Length: 229
Image 1: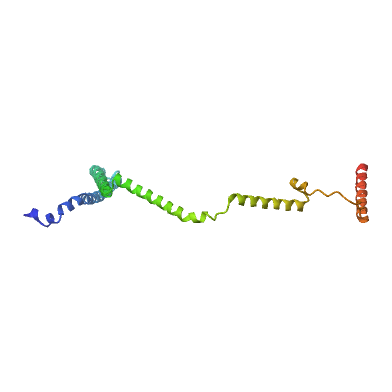
Image 2 (image 1 turned 120 degrees about the vertical axis):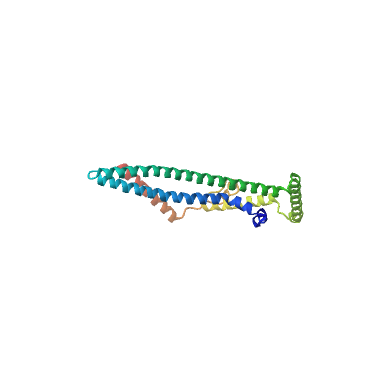
């Protein structure tokens, strides 16, 4: 009758099985704490017996010998306790590792089930059909865009005409720069040659002639000075 208790109805067995590692670790840690306290107590007793032996070594050899004997007994007990502590620590580490491995495996199992659920409704044929539908819709979109822009191409400007007009503007700009610097392009030299004089050549203005004479005199004086050096 006890097998049909509340634990059986509500899955108590599964809960206990799941919590078994936790309970085992808690029990081991409790025992480990008790052994650590015992280890410290034994070490304190050994220190006391060692102090007694040192105290009576010269005055009471029997008491010193008894203290050393008791210290040896405590030392043997301490070694046993230390071994038990190491054993418990190893068991705790093993249980924790095993529990982590189980949790990891359960997580991987759940991930596998989730992937199966996601891929349950997917097939290669469905994927291919979806991709074909997308390509078809893209093609329709391009055709619509082309149809909507056909009317505007009739009024488009001729590229050759634009290039010709651009070349004319560039040549005009170049001519203006040449005129400003006093240099005439080769292509325009023939058209811009001075016309043949029909009358007598006009004499230079007196002021201009005088200025040129002064420049020549200045140049001569500079040359003379250089030669004298």
